[in-house]
Image (tube, rainbow, N blue to C red):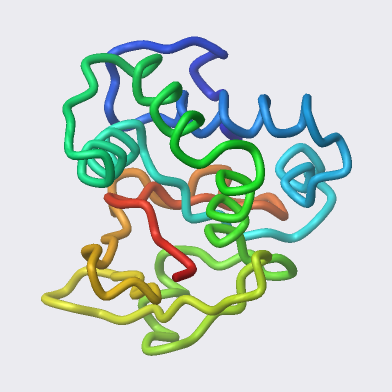
Length: 169
């Protein structure tokens, strides 16, 4: 699901190279991480995946500095959050046991979803957009990109590209 265009950094802000590399790095250091579910297509899962552009905007905002490449974004996130912090935030983007399409999210909103991190994220419709409301009042709510939604549709796991990292706190 993550490496649809290969396992390499590029200049496409709408794919998931940074998330792919972060998950790979976490699983290398912690093979028993709950993030391993992303490699187990037999388990139901809805993933709200920050695009590479979302990762760049978020880490640039957190560290108040620009990042010129996906590799720099990856390094900035890893240096800022480390293994445990990055794992915790990425688990907040995953909802186990449900395969929710974009249409199902729209129809169910407003709804609270329990994430694999243990917290909840609220799904709402704002100005016609599916929005994710997290628990950090200082960061923007994240929009689900309709054009990058329903990745892997028809399978047990589905992903939706989002515009900003969502935060459990």
